[in-house]
Amino acid sequence: MANRKVIAYNRKAAHDYFLEDRYEAGLVLTGTEIKSIRKGKVQLKDSYISFVNQEAFIKEMHIAPYDFGNRFNHDETRIRKLLLHREEIRKLQQKVKLKGYTIVPTSLYLEKGLAKLEIALAKGKELHDKRQSEKERDAKREIAKAMKRY
Image 1 (tube, rainbow, N blue to C red):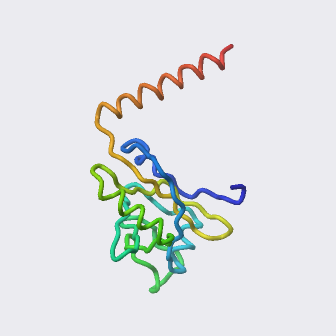
Image 2 (cartoon, rainbow, N blue to C red; image 1 turned 90 degrees about the vertical axis):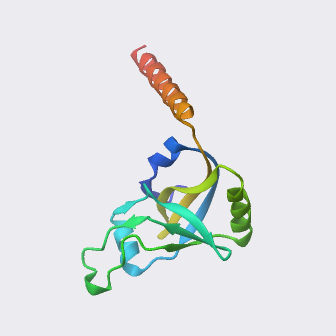
């Protein structure tokens, strides 16, 4: 974990879902995409994972065009293939078929020069669950503030 440089977090995922199992997936990228990722120009906010023919793909992940990419630059929100083991894909597909489960990207990072995506099996939160999470977070913040004073 010491060689890991986090590029982007998906804070909305933790707010909107209960995150359960987490997996690490590689990405199939073009040259201008990885250069743009290294500059930190990535957004995971509205992205999601889908399956086609026993393969996983990430959709709506925004990678800004590379500044020096001329005519060979990439499409910003193109569909990108995820690299996962066959058993992991099969397990995730089975879970998604259950009611309320989805797969969301939680973070994008560089590890040993390679871009990796952390994805999580997630179950949607109801409105009252989100309020409860906010109350717990505020309570923890108040406790930390009180402990800091003493």
